[in-house]
Image 1 (cartoon, helix red, strand yellow):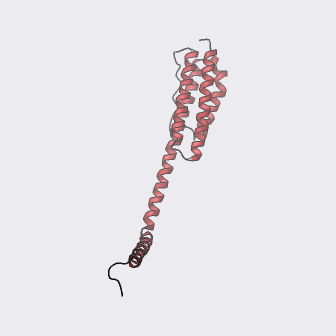
Image 2: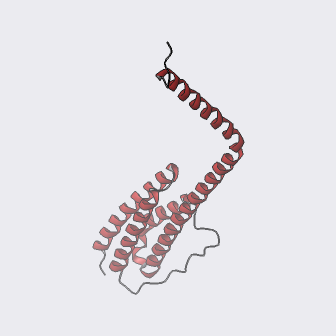
Image 3: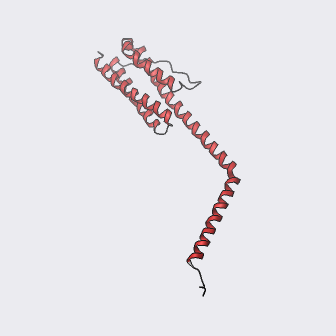
Length: 173
């Protein structure tokens, strides 16, 4: 005698047929929208590349600004030139590694701070810390290669800040 109504076997068969239909329909719709997905993927990659370029340019601007600050201090206090030369050289290399200052950006002419050498070195150390912190924040959203570079530059900036603080302690004015 045959049972009437829904059996477990017929329910499983119906569910399997529906699932198979959904899979086949899904495969067909992927083929139809493949071009749209390809365009969206290309757009996303282009947007990510633009974002990375913008991050690199911002980091280069910050390093270029720091380099200008070194020049200001050396111009205002020539006695600090020997102590700042290796640090300034490293900052210049960091700026180059980040792509240099953005095209069309003129570096401001150095202005002589009205403070003494000690205060100027302390201000330069504070600027090094600020730029190192900015690089550290930027590396959180950067791609791996740029993040490694920014981490290295930020670590060097922190070391520079320490050295500048020590140099300021040794300074007479």
